Amino acid sequence: MNETFKNDFVISEKEPSEKEKQLNEKLRSFLKEKNLFPTKESERKKQEALIGMKNLIEEFIIQTGVEQGLTREDAKKRGFMMRTSGSYRLDVHTPESDIDIIIIFPRNIKKEHCFTIFKKLLDDDELATDIVPVEKATVPVIKLEYGGVELDLLFAFLPYDYIDESIDLYGDEIVEKMKGRENRKAINGPRVAKALLDLVPNTDTFRLAYRGIKLWAQSRHVYANPVGFPAGIAWGLMLARICRLYPRANAAMIYKNFFKIFSKWQWTNNPCTLNDNYIGTTDLIRNEVWPNTMNTGWNEIMPVITPAYPRMNSTYNITDTTYKVLVDEWTRGAEIMDLIRQEKLEWDALFEPSEIYVRFKNYIEITWSAENEEDLKSWDGFLKSRVRFYFSEKERTIHEQGIFLRPDMKSYRNPDALECKFYIGVAITKPVPPTIWDSLVNSHFTFDESTKRFDNREAFPDPVFKHIKRSQIPKYVFGEEREEQSTHRTELLQINKQSKRRRWRKESIFEPLRSSRALQKKKTGVDSSIVTKTDEDAAAATTLEQPIQKKKRIDNRKNMILRDLPEEEEGVQMLF
Image (cartoon, rainbow, N blue to C red; front, side, top):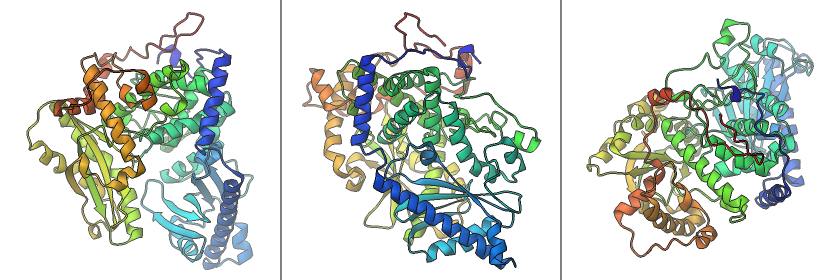
């Protein structure tokens, strides 16, 4: 590893200037306008939901113990622990965000009890709605709303007869005492959150910056671990890495460096980490600690490593396709941040919605359905975690044909039928035969095989793959943004027509995605009356023309780590 990638390395301890302090306050005001800070009412509802869930779990402990021959009093003494993770534990939650809850049980409680006895208690509680148990997930979970608050319940089981608050959940010893990888993964949530907060130099700066990064990732449709984009904790870990490189920076300064650095980060031999690795003392756990878990496949494209033992790659789902999308979005973010700092744009330009449904002419539509609402929710959640196998299989061959895919991060529920739809934008950079669409909507062997893991799979209709044009996308996908996005599409085609001959590395590849106000400031002088098919395809593919780099090519450049980092005022350019 290059010296400058050591976890204690600092690029700059520069304090924010007056201008950067003003930008920071503007950012805070913008995020408050977006309702990204909790209110007294939302906090009250969340607290009531947590208290209600704690009472329900206590009743579950008692009922299960009684069925096992214990008295109610003895069963209650067995105890349990309830901890939060994710945005709630990091204290970056919003009024509408869910709460991830990890429940730690004694040895007399088993997983099957959670999905039978506890599930029945939830069914009988009028405050519990939209209950979706996912027992066969990598980490079993029950998703529900309780008192109007979305909850994700995960379960861990300790080999102790009694559970109480004296147990150190954050020490490494407890991990090695736990049996089962799914147990260790479940308990890792609160452990990672605590380690992350302990490692950032300024928690207030991190929390403000995280609220915006999460909004940005969701707005740009790059926030979904099952589909192949980073999830909340991965974005938090990457942000924390920048906070450690610039320990005295405020959120506005962090943003500038976040986008610029990650748009140029060379991941070969340089994972994103916050602390040094601890392998552990037992062979069983040691095999679960990154990098011992590394494979030679696509799941090591962009490793972002959790700081708590056992360390894991939080971005193992990233594919060549989604990684390319991320680099393009970081590049766009870096360009917009430069203009914000020059006072040529306001903060809202950075957070504009993704143009995924106006930038492409062709799409692959995947439709899945079920016979009832509960089955559809389970089927939808599972298939979203499988769809990355489709485009990770296709990308092996279609890039050579000049075809590139841009998946969305979510599916869309049809309000008029028991079905959900998922879309993948298709950019075509050179002539292809009409039969190409047959290969794209058929022959998805890896995807089909992966769906066989779903319980009672034969009872669910096969997902339907279909090639459609942009005009065929249902209105409920666009919502109220359709007219605004159509305007952005016209601007996109104009600017890409003008700039398509520029070299890829120097091109402002996301220039068309800026706000209308920015476009008015920068006159293009391009005749917008005619947009040919060729121009449209070029516009959709502008950010995708560079072929996905194979591992072999990356290995040839493994000594090129990270270049063109932000230059400090002292005139020293940090070069990784």
